[in-house]
Length: 522
Image 1 (cartoon, rainbow, N blue to C red):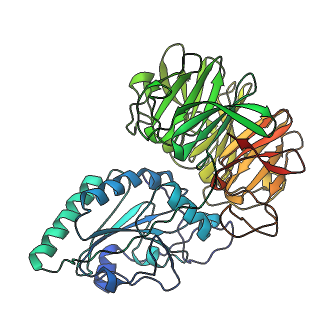
Image 2: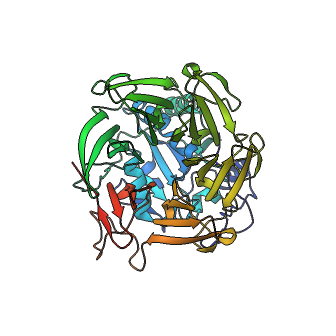
Image 3: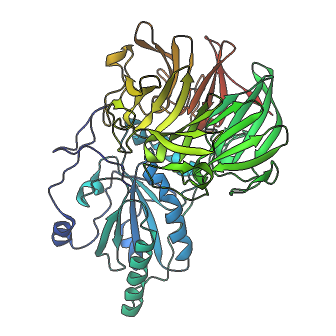
């Protein structure tokens, strides 16, 4: 699977404009023109190394360029393959270099890219290629592509998409064998210096929030691979009363202590049960809060690729489930990796692709003909299922009575920005969370570092919280008079307050209409 982009004739763009790429040359023409790897741009900044790398540094190394952008679910999917390759060839002169070529405006910010590198545990060098210098010269057409460079600096091969681990491993092995036979492999190592943020927080990249009965609040503490079960002692203090998983990353059922999760995201509570989107295990888990046991009800830990699936839930393979909602009988799943909404019948133990063709795009219509693009947030309001459709920066909904998908806001894969006012003209930037109360929808407008409010009655959108003037500051970074939001992933309306997963600040925040404060979790 590939994450697509819009092509044109110029690399120049402004906020909200399409990503533009020159496609005049094939890779064969690039090899004929350049013959060898292309020197890194002087304008590019580097992460995980103490100084900029040059081709001279890479003499004697087999190098795999991984072009990525951190919004892209397909790029996220290949990180485990890159980790596998790095482990397999850890004693060889082999190096992965990530080339970050942004889709969204926010993804051009160094602090945002650094947060993504830490969030996904990327420990190889990363070049920030905001000018698309290498993207253009290696004729990249979609995310994620790979270019393999030999120890003599020559371009060896290029491929793209998910599921290329074995192919890449074979190509790397051949390059290392050839380099060894020629006696040109390096005995040196490139010093890699991954850095983590200095924070004093209970949480690590919290993803989603859910509420239950008796003032219970659930937090997906994603990078700690656990769910925190808390009780609100006050609107601004949550006492941890239980924990699901978190001892180590994995995929295991059992008691809450035995259970293992892998970067969980969305949750929904129903009658003593918490359903969990165990995102990087590609599974739906069921936590019985009375018995304190976790079991898997769908998914086997492996990524699925069946866009037209229909069958027994326990035998299905899922693809990055990101959020959940339920009406008691059915569980609705934002299947981000399939660009679809799935529905799980909790009584019949069956699951099927409910809405979306599987094509990554924005188009309305019937359940099977409509298109989504990495749906990442859900809110169920009666017979309407609202969707934060992240890659098209849109707010969509499924009218479950008519069987139609419609658009509330958004215009397509490459239309994004920050515009309040008339809903039909509004712009968002990669929203991940959505909730509602009455005629209002609250949106975690993630890449705008904002919380927005949609009034469905008068068809307008306004900003509730936005970092104005000072930009985004972080707990361990530059100082601000107030700590703004940093890529909030979720928002929930509860008892007149907004609870926000302030993901890159590693906090849950509470907004009472005038002040944004930290929720004390402990």
